[in-house]
Length: 66
Image: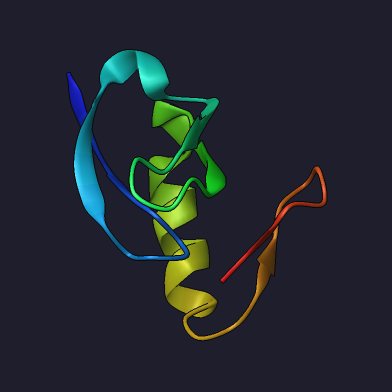
């Protein structure tokens, strides 16, 4: 399974292996660290992203995105 990841900072997208789900990854271009959601959480993550468009999002561990 492939996961399409998009960096929240520089907006570059790339394909990740399915093992990246529920892990933190570093952007290959700018080095920003961000979390790839669990596969079960993808629908929830899409809704949060849609609601937070243009805002800053803080995850449960205090990391900020946006």
